[in-house]
Length: 306
Image (cartoon, rainbow, N blue to C red; front, side, top):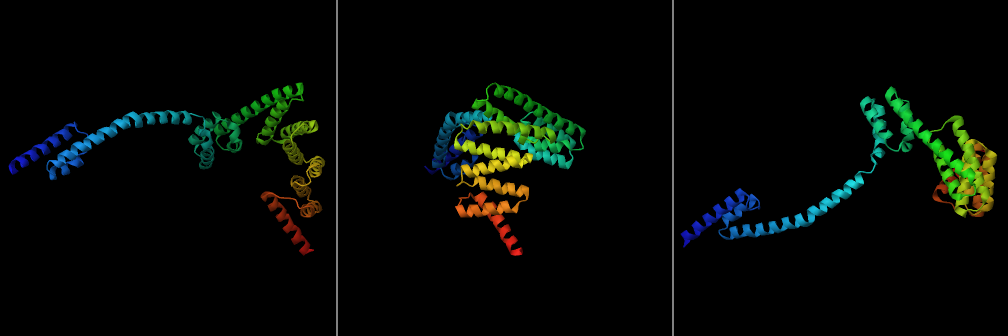
């Protein structure tokens, strides 16, 4: 009986080895010590493991692989969006610094095929490079972008002049014009002329007086900032005074007056606004509070010196 069991064990071990070797059984070879050291039952464990492995493979094939294919398709649809240019700003700046001509040219060309409007600062930097080709590419990109703005503004202005009462037309014109002024593409008289055009459009929108309160305040803010940049301080002061009178419990007008006082180097104006804010108990946002506290400290130190 013992001899029979030994022979049976040897046969099972040999069978297990051959089945694994030929690939009929998919279990790993690590199971062989179990088969060898545990007579009969070890061979049974091999078949149990094989059955479970076979079941896992089927579920992976039916569910896992299909899910992976679906995820892969979704992933590809997301990655195919034209987003890689966002990651080019830092590499391009580094390429300009390390003076690597091949890298510079490759990256600048990549930017040309994407939304160059997001990278005006980088393109301006590239225009000052010592590589003639990089300068040419950057200049070409900026000229094309400027031409695109000019064409759009020309069409939007014509549409607005046909119907100045249209909120949608004036809104589209205003949005594009502001983006152009803030883009960094304009300099000197060209920028000033566009800012004067913006002043006209903002004044027209304000004069219509059919806006929600938040929109009206926003327009006065933009008119104030634009006139301050144009150094038309009379317009800036009128905006600030109107906002203070119209919304006396809001911080906006007081901050405008402080900003105007800074530009005019008028400490008396700043001091008056600080007193009014305290006297009227004006609620200040965290950013406004920092500004007020800064100028309060300056006023206090000025009083001490006197």
